[in-house]
Amino acid sequence: MTTEWSDFRDLDQQIEAAFPWMVEVRRHLHQYPELSHRETRTAKYIRESLEQWGIQTVSYTGKDVVGILKGAQEGETVALRADIDALPVEEKTGLHYASTNQGVMHACGHDGHTAILLCVARVLSKYRDLIKGTIRFIFQHAEEVVPGGAKELVEAGVMEDVDGIFGLHLWQPVEKGIVAAKKGPLMAGSDGFFITIHGKGGHGSMPHDTIDPVVVAAHLVSQLQSVVSRFVDPVYPAVLSVGKIMAGDSYNIIPDRAEIAGTVRYFDPKVRDQIEERIHRMAEGTCTSFGATCDINYVHGDPSVINDDKMNQIVMEVAEKVVGSDRVIEAVPSMGGEDFSYYLTQKPGAYFFLGMGGENARYPHHHPQFTIDESVMPIGVKMLTYSALQFLQLEVS
Image (tube, rainbow, N blue to C red; front, side):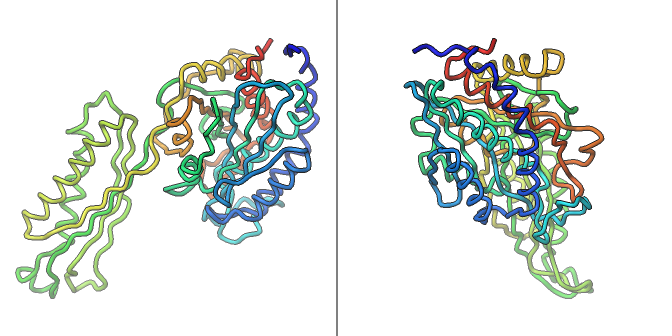
């Protein structure tokens, strides 16, 4: 039997009809957010929902939920991914469905991502007799921490037998209803560095008898600002930011140690290697010049999100059908990190942004007043649904 796209002619209507239910799901998830690696209630809710629709569920880490929908016809396997964890943020939206878990909030849109993918699974479960191949729904834990859930899932084998993968992010910086996609680098690799400077403490009135780690740290922070501007080719984007300095307990005592921590963002791994080497040389050189020593811990975090050209082309073609060519743009690469990158190191895939910025989503991601514009969620469902079906060799008409 050959399945034609026309066999799915009422798919749009099914998605639109499911919108009120999807809003209810998203708001339920928003009320009960859970931090990374602690998503037990969320995972149970997802698993019970999938099994209710006759979708087989497995877990690769004990914290994730993966649904497997096998079509009636043999074919390739496509994966769709949503992240399910929340952030350690105290919500200040005033919404009637605000977080009931004090100090924890869905402040990045993962509640929306989860509701969207659940809706995709619910709708497609009704078409299993027409599906050629297998659709794998990955509900991933711990996206907001490093190392995160994607790395654990990949190491546990979630991408074995998968031929391609798609994912989306509801994106406040982009105007509502616009799909922003891009082949190649989309989101930056994200590393961390941690430097402990060892000096010699003493009384603040006798600095000549000390090796002041605070002064060393101040010099080093200033020096580090030249790493990107003077040692990285300006055609390659990169960021180095110091986010933490700690030293001392009293205003009149010179401590014996100081700590510096920061982040590095990049697209090209060679640039990352350059920056890592320069941090080591600057830290060691600066400390030596003052008679201090240091310990340096450079932590490799999530790699860059680099979209496959052909998979991105599927997203672009589907987007033109879903929102119209005038609402499809080339995404501006973000220096933010995203562990979807681990899936892309295994198999071809594409990650894209679904714009929701506007009056109903005025605050940036991770802000205590952040919220999503729920009206764009059906677009997300259509994008993932049609991208999956097109990957499984059903042309969108």
